[in-house]
Image 1 (cartoon, rainbow, N blue to C red):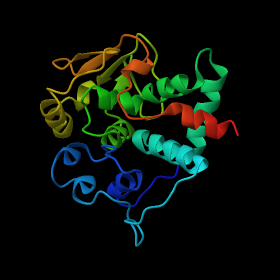
Image 2 (cartoon, one colour):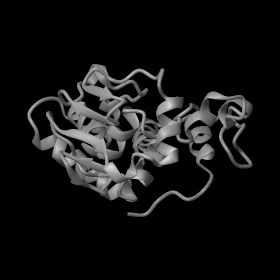
Image 3 (tube, rainbow, N blue to C red):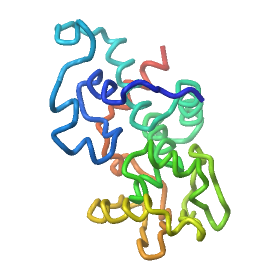
Image 4 (cartoon, one colour):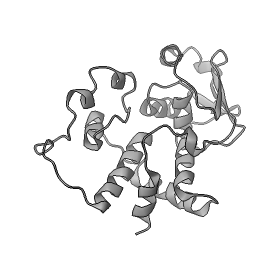
Length: 208
């Protein structure tokens, strides 16, 4: 899947809010949104009226950026959400939250979803005792996500656990920092999703 390789802070500035794509940097004065709270580019400081379609598109782009998902995969998730019982928008967010890289991030093993994705790619984690190196792997209720035994001395993961020790873990996850693992108690509900997303706009966009 293709990845956005330009400066990640430009994405946040384009959306006009922090998407927390660079981990701890986003909480400091170095954050680009804090320093330059306007869109990038020559006309970034100009005011322009956004159409209904534009608003819906920006919401989709913002959500893709949050979770680090490309267009093709995002569309696949939307189709999965449509085919599930319940509200399509909420189903979509539940699927995105169920990605392994997101769970690794939520458990505090990574300072950002991008870093968590890289750690998964490098084979640092296992699910129910089996190595999984696919960031898009969808976890299920009852799954146990853990740092592999031969990776528990990894300096980055250890530092992340210390830095993120005070960061709250969502109620749908149970973390055991000492064992370097977490259990999925249940799948995430809409109330568990703390990112500022108006999912109904995405549904409206795809329904056209």
